[in-house]
Image: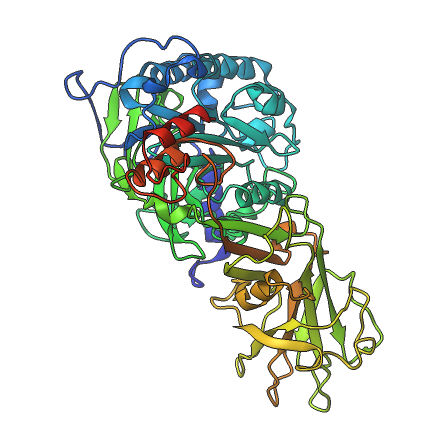
Length: 626
């Protein structure tokens, strides 16, 4: 990412300057103020008056479930309001509630740094008062902790004190709220449901620096909700350094670069870097369409591609160093699920103004159907330690050490010569198996497998520039366990005797460099298991190339990094039954959308069996709502 001709001292100086106030130089202001203008009431009216009653008391007609357009509000860092300008914080939430019907606001997401000092009770009290406006209205919302919510003054290396955040904004706050679906064990991450525009959404709020334990929890949540489009909010993720260097990319804008973590370390003791979060978690969850963040005083956005080649919008907004602690700027995200757009405005209720620069006023293109599992498909994922799964077995066997078991190691080896010698060719063969994946509550026996993908992480790839060998994945047709050795398997594994058909392959060299993920199509093997063949797992064998002695290491199910352990993703055909037409476990707006889309026809949406999808079927869906 960085030019090799820029001295490290220069980079560190830039980093130090940029993070002095979470993304602004030591003494305060941006070099240019944003373009904005105040609006008259005739230009734009966002709604007047209060909202009576909680959301669950309002009539169904008040929320048109298939209306194309609706709004999500983003609340960037409110830390300075909690410390010095509480009236601005409360003005924001009051405006949101007052504008609820006019804008059809369905959800509010806070980007973290609720307060400025995690050890100051007064700031938490003020934040509670401001956010309680949303609670009292019944409006669905989510929060995530920022560095200032977890440390005394937001500095890395300071004491980690999450207690006040958990007590004030952890799961207990949302007890009884139907939109709140759960929190991580720490209480620092959470997820919420809302439905609008005929689409079921999941809002995932992740703790600052996205620790592995939080992502492992979140992976289980997303695996269980593949029919929901996912909007992620976390605190520190993007930066816009080029705005502080006159557009010169001394440090390219985007995810926080590794060099900055040497100066601005992680705030969570187990936190990871932004690029790691993207590589390890965000891009492989294909129902994520948007990542919002704050922390760095700027506005910025970029588009990245997930593993399915679909766009993921990554958007930064933070105004903490504008006058008056941020001048009340917030994000208005107007969704249109039919046109496939999110129109983003930046507005201040206290200034009654909008920002008109391109970085403040823009439109994102999102084809929401691309991020949802189709209703005629089921999905299961198996990864040790995720969603309670404990059925992964893996090891490797070594011709060089034929009586040694490697079942407890945190990596597995596949190599055409483990000795790396021109005089020998000692093979290394890796094995992996996912037990208990076919049957009741899992992939149904006899299913038609649409796709099965083995996902592995290769921390040590092929290093030689002379060769880029392939590695072949075979279905194993004999029993083995994690104690197996080269000799106990009768001299390793051989095609025909021990191995069935080759079901996939991948290259040993990481392309691009540093991308350790491998995704291998193993549909044929999983289909055979679904059809009743014994599941003895998969073997990964090296291509034998004369003169090449390099191999690969693969993270195992014993590896400490839960989200990089071997993973099997399976998509299979299903037939929807009952009013839960999309199979997500709840009868809601997307089921109604499915039914109306099939209106006048037949099929799974013909719930009363009269041969046509009509009013009788609609009555069944509405009668089962929620």
